[in-house]
Length: 227
Image (tube, rainbow, N blue to C red):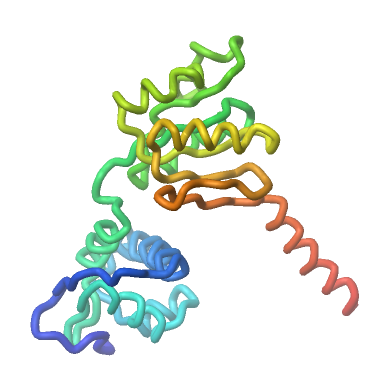
């Protein structure tokens, strides 16, 4: 087994740097998925090289990314899978339950509310919010309540929501984001197309499905030209 870090004490943590790039945190999420799979398979230890080869990653990048947060490897052993998995969950804030609200109870919002993977990873879907009277008071298939968006601010004070997911048509996205910010929610995941504005203290991350599809279309077009 290849040694990953030369340390005196395993799992030694250091103070986090002021700035860790989003690309780094994204890779940590990938590493955590890999470790989950290894743990489920009963693997106890693994080296950066073996981890990289098994999951098509970069061993040097793995070591560099983890070095931001501490020294987790042991000479001649590598990484203890359960321990590293636990530390990554702590670093990513997944060692506590996070309360998520979904803005918009349309097809996308309902599908997201009922997706079981969120709960498995520690995200509790606390509520859906919508403006349509015919939807308010009902529930998704998995029992997530659909609430009046006008109640968001009051309920957020009481329930202390952590993350809001925007799943409304593009013309309504910015007004809904403004309501979310006013309610004191500091993290937003946006599925609506177009650019949205938030104050500096609020973190906004957008998932544009159309852009992803267009990227795939470009890939297919290049293949057609080479045929």
